[in-house]
Image (tube, rainbow, N blue to C red; front, top):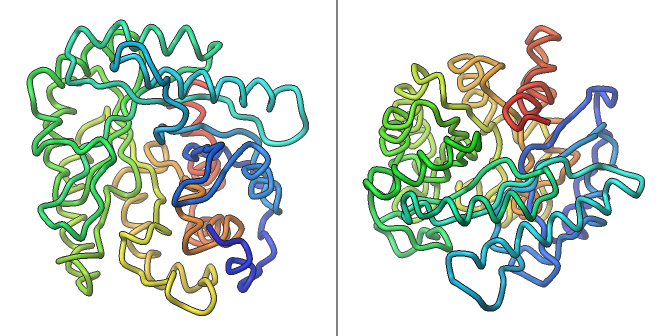
Length: 330
């Protein structure tokens, strides 16, 4: 994320009194491809004009333990973020209210030990697991860092691990690409007691063999999402639209897009998703700093406010904060 480049498009935050719970951001205290992104960086963005009061940290592979059993090493991320959340409680600014980390659900019922370790480390903030299944049979499409096998969400051991997650009252973050959404539907049917939160609009790819096929991909995405509408245990995160793998090409421009330009590409799909799932099953997300590769935090939330302008006040309240508070039990 290049803040100097992002400063090439400056907007004032519109409707600054709308309360926001940002249910998807990451933290890194080391330099990654997205740069360092710590509590102070989050507060720069969350405090730039919109009224962001709480956030949910989502797994990103940060600060795993260096030793001990491999399956328990991701608990280091929860320990790290819990420390930042404690700091956010003590100091002025946005508060990290919940933590979602990683555990290998393909361990089956044995993953219970890992889940319990996360819960113990989180200081009452632990809410669930993200185990990505994102992969494409195309070397130019970035896979998940966990390098998942094909059909991960359908495997018997994975389903058993998902049941262990549900038994503890925890939720599951599904991160996959648009051509894999049938796997999410299969998991949702297999474990109906598990709340599944689909990340980033379902993952509409726009690179590799999907480059230049935006309308076609969005049509395929709609078809893939439609079966999920009937599954009450599935919730949709409406965001991720700044990721370079979604193929907008904004990162190659001299300046980032405005919120109106964002809506030219994404507005119809965002509204379709909200209309099909309903505001009580949708939540806007920032996905920062990853979305910061192509657009600023202020511009992103301005786009969300513009796209939702036609909804009733109670529906907007759900999209910006209420659904997140309910789903993550804040």
